[in-house]
Length: 594
Image 1 (tube, rainbow, N blue to C red):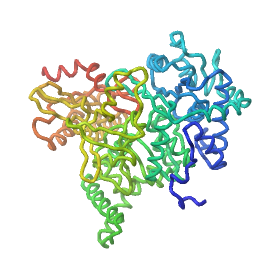
Image 2 (cartoon, one colour):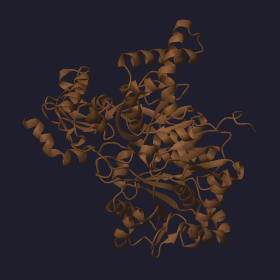
Image 3 (cartoon, rainbow, N blue to C red):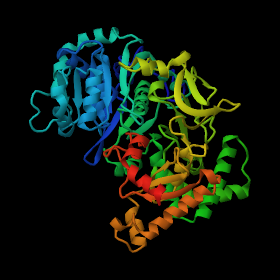
Image 4 (cartoon, rainbow, N blue to C red):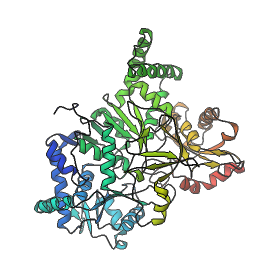
């Protein structure tokens, strides 16, 4: 069977649940590369056969150590091959996989481990092991710790390689467990990032993920010969779905080097065909590209590129003078942007947070189509997406096949389908609120156009209602500000206040450049008049696009960027507005009292 002669759906493993997927992939795809990871300076391939053997070893080892069907087993690790072996191994043992972000504090790890009633936890290394050791005395359900990369004294924890050895003698038991898993059994507990309160454990079944995988495969979002570069945390629903579909189709995933500074170098080395990301990466590349050339020339190049690619897509003849302008723009700009992604990109996907349509148009013109999708943990990752053959920038695409969408009377987006979760673990009140009247109430505000494209206009809880009664969506202003080269994050505030203000953080990678350009020490940049002038210019540009009542009147440049480590960002780099508002209440009050 030649790649490309069948649809993606026909080429899949045909797995019944997510528990048998990796084992079936090993049989079907054999020596084909399943995973790539870097060891030293070399990218190492792991075949599907070896992946399946590791998964079987993990499952057998867990069974040998007493893990029962439907027990909860957590993973606390960066995205790496062992995360994949552990996840599929947990599922093949008939257990439920619980994901924990590698950036979580010991207290946050404790919350998930305790709330989920996890019997075991996989930890990446000594750093993650220390987090669990700090709280394990208050975890009565926790019986077992497995260390992927052991160093030093791990006490009564089990080394990952020893787990695999234990599994060798329980192969028959694995087959029995896999056969016993049903579509209604819980596959994953994924805890929401908690932008508005304590995380809630979404219960997602094997049926949810098998069906959403089918939806994605049915519209050929990923192809059978794909090479995917993955830096997203596998603890997050977005990365998990990409992994499931990739393994199901016999494609290959290359894992990052656990260093944000190496994402672009990794892309250039791996040369992927598909790159899933969150908006921040595209925003940074966009601002960098627009900072090193003449803005007017770049704008004209993008206009030409966008027009020509749309004509090519429609099968129209491109006039010679327009083609010549396109070729020149390609030589001067487009090919350089494509090379930052490795030069082989067929498609990128973005989700988890809003992205400005200007950025999408820029990359499309450059030949790096970035398709925006929409979903939540509660929709088993995705509910709608733009596709290469059906997209509308500014929208989040059409519902996936099998998903229904409608707009409630108050503007809230409601969803229904086989991918919708079954509720929050041990939280019936929140479950009933989210799943009222047979529909998932997303908390997002939006609209649906005549062609079925969904547009998200804001979050119900994020809408700012000024003292004058005006409803304002802060994301539109914030996205505009983040297109500035120097700005990393922008948080617009003004609920029940007389006007809008903004908290601004600077991009730490760009601060030294600004400092050199203006003869400043890097530490003096945030308080400098030069930077205040640059930020004011960005705010003026955004204010020009909106009415007076929606304009930002004052701003404060914070001394440090927002981060996961300091608690202001989620692992997918969304701002926790409640945390920022509480943490910088003094700065906000000062802006209104000046």
